[in-house]
Structures are given as C-alpha cells and as structure tokens.
Image (tube, rainbow, N blue to C red):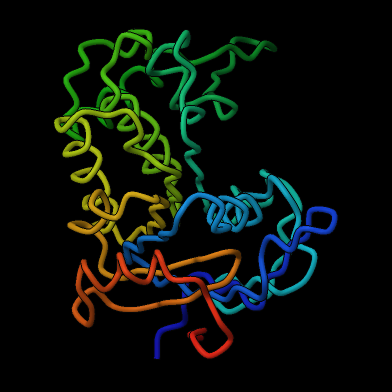
Length: 253
C-alpha cells in the first residue's frame, strides 16, 4: 500500500493553560485535496503553523514519506517540499510578479567574479508559470498589488509549482474574493492535484472547499471529530459535524 506523503500523529499544543490541540492525527496522500474545516478557534491554523515550522508542537510525531522528521523552522518545512500560503501573507503587493515567485530563492548568473540576479531567466520562467495557470498577467514586472485577488493567489501557487513542492497548504485562500476569484483558486487547486501535489485547504466556509476536495477533516475545539471521503458523506452532514461539540466517543482516527 502507498505510504502517505504526510502523517501527523497525536499532535498536542499548549499556549499557557490553553490546550489548543488535543492529540490530533492526520494523513495526506500525494495528489490528494483535503478540506481541513472547522469553526474559528477549532485549531486549524495552529496545526498548520506547526507543519509550516512557524510554531513548535509540544507532543506528537510527524512523518514525511514514512520517515520521522522534525520541523523546527520554515526552512525545514520548505526543504521537505511544503509550501504554506497564509491568508493575506502569501504575496508582497509592492513587489513584481517575478520577485514574488522567486523571493528568497532568486536565480543568479556569474559576471566574472561577481554574481548578479538573472532577471531575464526569472522573467521568462515567471511568464511560463502564470500563463500555464491561465492568469491574465502581461509582464513579469507587474506589481502584484495591481493583480486581482484570484491572480495574487495564482502567483503564490505558481511559486509552489515551480519549486517542485509536494504539499501546498492554503490558509483561507478565498477570503475577500469574489465569485471569479474563488473559481480561479478552485481551478488552480485542481491543477495542483493533477500534478500529484497534495493540498490542504483550510477554511471555516465549507461551501468554498466542498466542490474541490476529495476528503474532509473536521476539527472542533482542538480535536479531530470527523475524517471522511467526500463520497461517503454529504454537505449537510459535514456542516452538522462542524457545529458539533466533540466528546471522547466521537473521535475518529
């Protein structure tokens, strides 16, 4: 049987006396699109920040392709092939499309003993990426603040595709987007799945992720209460589970 790309097992996190995550376990397979859903305060963002290396778990284990790993920093997470797009922080508006895609990982070329940025190469490859996603961006030098909300998410997703990411985490990617932007993001996510890139889509708005995801994980008050394939549930059942207060008898491994 194929190993999961990612396994987080019995993850706990405390903030002082607040037990924010209470033994959460999840698995993600390559190319799988998973909706991580729950009301505000359910623990979704805390779990993902641990995976992204922003905060540290207090207890539990993380496995990547079957091997136990420690994620102590954002760099550790990226080295594994995890790209996390946080809400409102996935791009820098005052930088160009090209600069956003290659931020922190710029291409350089040698000029004698000097190394300079290879703007031509980065520009060409940026345009290939955004065109491949169907974005209406005419120049790699266009500042991202002049892109639509959906296009800005597309630029961030282009970065994930270029750097051969294995898992993309989207934290409320459709926040403040109109219908067109939501449709764009949904199409981008489907393309990630087609590329065998795993996706975790975090949201408290089930209707946004329901058409796209193949599996859903529900968190409530720091516990996993539901983990189910889309074909084995319904929108109404998922909504009811999101509103349900967990008890020990409800937990699903």
